[in-house]
Each structure stands twice: as structure tokens, then as C-alpha cells.
Image (tube, rainbow, N blue to C red):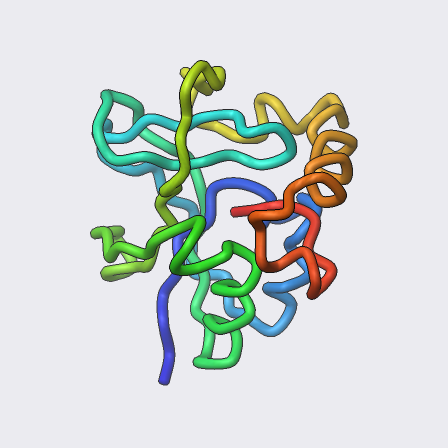
Length: 146
């Protein structure tokens, strides 16, 4: 079965975890309605419902195996939940962060690449990967998130 997935962080083209989408089909770019908040969580972002930010990302078509791989990376359903959202390409799964955001910085532009371009996010991802005992994907070698 084919699934559409909206990605907005380390799964984007040119980002750290894009390799997980090697067998996926790129469907198109998408910017959400302005109803989210995008947080910088160190080496990866967290999308949360509510707010007034339109988030930039890409839509991919994945098979069941590809969706399971993404679920593992995202720590679904514990760390991230999934929700279908409308896109011009059809309804796509988006991973929404379930953790506490506290005083985490907001990515006001809604574009993860505004932070990841300087390379600092990649170092932060490696640090988080080693330190976060709550993330179940660290055993599979994942180093960041959507």
C-alpha cells in the first residue's frame, strides 16, 4: 500500500536522514496552513498543532516498509504521533511531536533549513542521539528526526 508523508526536518532532501527516503517517490513541496508551531529540539525539529506558523516541507510516497522505517526513526507512537493533513498531492501523514517543548526555541519561519544550514544542527543531533535514553530509535542507528 502507498502512503503519502509530509516531512519538514532531517528527512528533507540534503538533510541528515534523507537516505531513509531513497526508495520513496518525491511528490512535491508543500507549505502547511498556518496552524502549527515548529520547535527546534536540538538536532531536529518538532511540529506541534496549534499556533500560527505555516511549515515548509516535502511530500513523498512510501510503501508500508518505508512508513515503518519512518515510524522507527520518529519513535512513533511514543515520541511522535501521526496525523493526516491535507496537501495539494492528497492527504499525507505528518509526524507531530508529543514531548514537552518547555522553553525550546520556535522556528518562526516554519523552515527547518533556516537552522540546519549552518551545520550546528547536525552536531546537536549526534549529541542528542548519544544522550537520549527515551528515544527508542537510537538502537537502530538513527541520529535525528523529521
